[in-house]
Length: 356
Image (cartoon, rainbow, N blue to C red; front, side):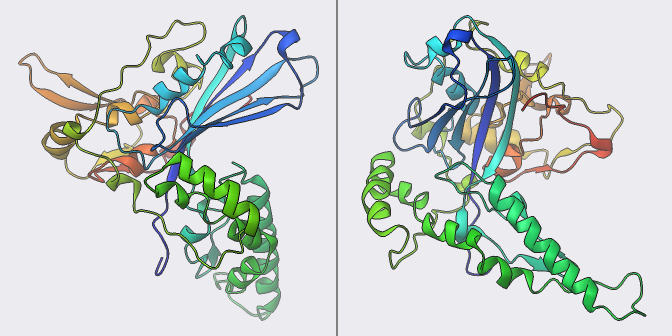
């Protein structure tokens, strides 16, 4: 990663609803920026009216930048609150929530793309960070990177001598320059400064001014590249510097609690599998995360995996409900002590998304 910015992420939360037929407009796309988060927190929504035969489905979601500062912020709470906006609420009233999910998004853009090749392999898609942040789209760039990687691998295989051993590594060195010469690089270069422009004292207003003036006039040809502020885990402020946020109580019709939401994911893990969520130091949650940040794990996790509970003597401890994990990977990213390690669980455990 020499010369590259730290990767920065967003947590995307999503629900699929079936709404009233008279409110459904197939193909309609709505995006918003800002509310309910404040202007210093990167956040925005999407609402897609899906064109499914004989159905009235919409996909709705909210993305919160994981470089947020207020330790009391809950991305899940912000998503639920977003649905209460008077311009949004009517769409869901009388409807039925069908699915829920969440995942972390690579939002660093061009500045955060690491070296793409290593002996015998390459980074493609979201693993490399090819998301176009302003568009909230990365499928097209991921597909193109897979095509370029396949072409490079084929050329590498074709170059191997006929007597090469079966374990001979394929030369993937050509993948990096091929990607840098593709339209993916040009597209990401054009929007490279939109996300980091948010780090000015103006926050959202600064980003909108940049996107509306500089980006519009120069189309990404400006002779400078802004850098990201640093790792998301370092952005969190201590509890005494933050104002607690009180979220509305869920009504079970429009807004919901975390556990009923996790139930829609059909997530499951074998109780006997090796832990896929581990702590580097068991003392850190109480000594640092709870003491300094009032336990942010219990708020940034969109699945209720982490909670501080008291034993019979009143002593508190961090409880990890790994069975709830929906594999968003936020804990590994946002923990201010970088004390949580998320790894792929054994046996393919996790959420069983339906229509997501």
